[in-house]
Image (cartoon, rainbow, N blue to C red; front, top):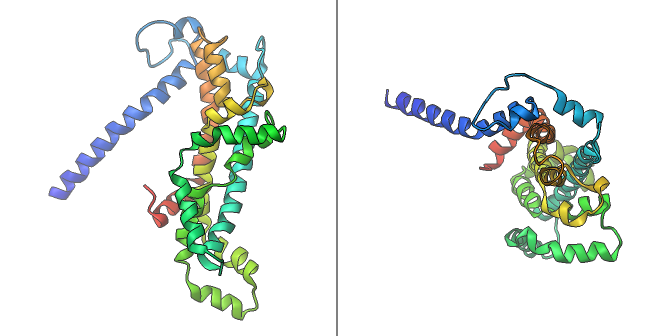
Length: 277
């Protein structure tokens, strides 16, 4: 009886917290279907009196819009997907090498990887900017993707999984004639799929939602990402058009929602196995 009351209390608490976080999202979605006149009315009105798709038509048809909104969405998706693929591949090979192969100074290297997690990302901005400027790569896709290619968190996450991988499976593969590469690609990677999905989703969200680095590294409107684009429009032609601004924000939120829905099962499995909180 006591456990039942405790469970009910936790469900009520979780529901209240969920409503608290979902309310701004609902208001954003609702406002995106309002006309400019209705969106600017004071007070909190959750539902539009007259639903309109004009704000979304304005985005997709680009009528009277002097900035490439759809290009911003494409840039964010391309950079997010490319950066995520690089992170997953590079981190998986680095973590497996540190966890299972006879590498010189393995413990020292791992300590260095983990130590880099203590360095704030913003501190690296100036050296990175100067480095890419020296190679004339500013305002390109390379400058938006390459800074994310080395992810110490991903190495640490996968290292923990590979460290506990059963040695018997590797020994059985060796008896079947498999070399190190075949063991890695055909035995280890398939079992690590949920962890890699987890790393992939977190990495995509980080890259897609990043605002500061794309703002610093790009200057032309065509190379902006959707996060920097929203900032530009919020201070520019959408200043007095909340409906269009919320439609743009909703458009920017959709890819993250779709990615989460696709990978949620693998994400839960990965979190369960690694104990991420």
